[in-house]
Length: 531
Image (cartoon, rainbow, N blue to C red; front, side, top):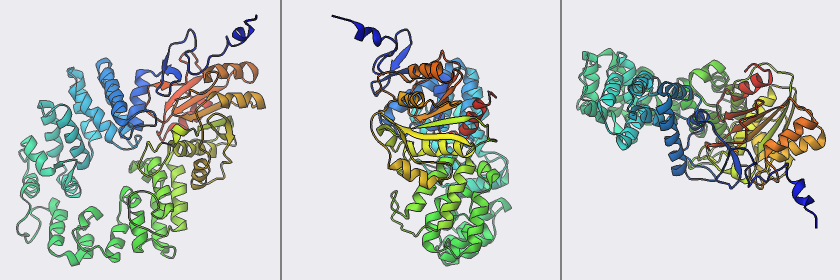
């Protein structure tokens, strides 16, 4: 009888067991991973959000983790939490909902420092009336309306820019069970100027009869909105003279001519949401050259994209939805996608991510294409985590000359994706290559077998690796011994689980929270030893 079988396995540990001597936790998949640092978890939750849940856990349980993490972090350093909320809210999170929820949690802390931090960042996070209503909804359900809430809300509603305030309350008249009238009554606001008084009067009472002119110049847009309600056939006049947005103009008759006027002055976020409608009605068509030029000038202006806080994932969703012609999502509209619009959206996705000059390093991109990554965690538009991972990997690869992009599940598979691929082509390729259980170690096994000398290996994953005979960190150690001792391992986690594949004792391994537009640039900085 021999025990050699037992001795041979001493250097490796199945992923369903913890590595001896390492502090590890069991993930929801059953595999053991390292526990994520609290501050990394804060950023991950704020960037990715938890409201859609994930493959291994529902949105309630995931959001419970989010809430507990934020509350624990506030107790340690409320100002750092405030900084993280601002960081995510400034166009880095998928939408502003997670930062707004965290803002409410910050306001609930007993520490004076937390309340001061809340008041300081409030107007920078709550930027629109829609944000205000969402904040009020969360606040009502989680803590109630105390003194600090009164102070923050009152300052927001009494700010000096009456024209901007009127625009917000006209554009977003109600959301999340709240309206402008509710907000005014809740905070018992006293108008600081006659212009504020006139605005508040309209919000609470409306106009029974249309005055001959706007009570004050700052309410001119409201006057044209009220005029259009009484003259719905004159939509083009109201849009032109009152600078009405599409949300405001819907009280009139929406003809193709009206949509053309709206299109010409449409903000970027509204343009993305209305590409289908504009195409269906005929404003966007292959032979509408001037309109095509206008779309291109907006969507391919990197500064404009950043100022409008357009997230790359929003563009990716728009790309996939638009090119489907109405086959995706809940819309009953159908349209013939304009090829040039599809090309513009494809180029815009790349522009929206941050990259820098090519590093000259060798990159291996390992995209998790296992079953858990096919979960539509980010949006209801059939945009899978594996597709987002592919797009982010492709963005990084497009900036470099030396790279490999492959997909891993229980094997490391060639996805047939190169930097010459458009994003839409890459999405199609990964959609046809999703399979199996998750084993991140197979990427290292392949590099060892093929003797691939890489400077940086980037894993795009949900970190729930469980199916391997050894842990990814153990496979990495073998790779360093046999191929490149200085290789950097970067794990970009695309779901807000409190786990990581990064061994905290490994100074050359990094964990990054997914969906942040700056991730490709951060990867390049790590490759160049800039951080």
